[in-house]
Image 1: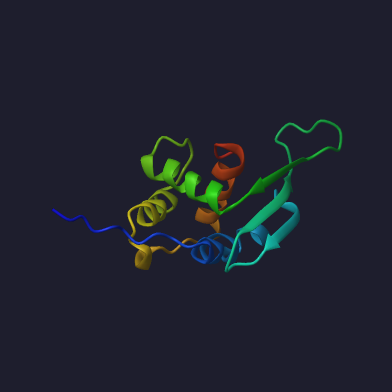
Image 2: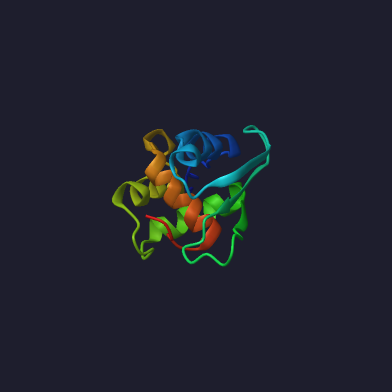
Length: 125
C-alpha cells in the first residue's frame, strides 16, 4: 500500500501567508521589525513587542523563522491555544494537512501564528 505525501508548505508560502498578510503593520505591538533573508529561502523575522506589563521602557526582542511558524501552525491546528480563532485554526489545519490551495491567512490569523511562534501563546488580542 502506498501513501501519498501531503504537499509541504515552502518558506516562500510561509512568507507570503504570514509576512505578506499585513499583520506586522496592522498591530501596534510589533515594533523595531527586522526581516533577514528573503521569501525564497531561509528567513527570520525579529521584532520587539510591547510587554503587557512593562518594566521601565524595555521591550523584549523575539525571533521567528519558517520552522517556528510551522510549529505554531501545528499547535494551532491541534487546538487548545487559548483565544485562538476559527480562521487561524482552519488555515493552520490546511497547512498541516497539505491543503495549501485553501490557505487564506488575513492579518488577524497571521498575527495569531506569529504570537504562538514567538510567545507560545496568544498574548495580544
